[in-house]
Amino acid sequence: MLDGAADPELFPRLLESGLKHRCLFDAKISGALAQASPHIVALKHPNGFTDWLLTQGWGKSYGIY
Picture 1 (tube, rainbow, N blue to C red):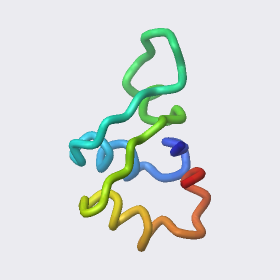
Picture 2: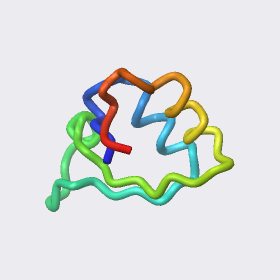
Picture 3: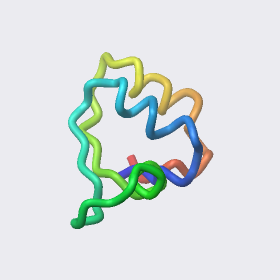
Picture 4: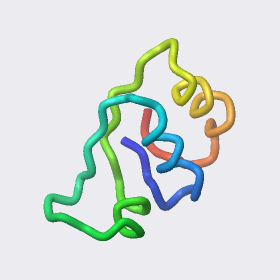
């Protein structure tokens, strides 16, 4: 689970990653709120986003993984 509000780079990188993900908010929400919302992500390795998350995001409270 990732917290989109933790870093403004997180959501755009997730969108570019090609990984499956889903917002935890059930309703359709605006772009800004979607970016700051929590997401469930199916992390895979090797993947550039997963590598970035584990190297650059470790210890920064980006989520639970």
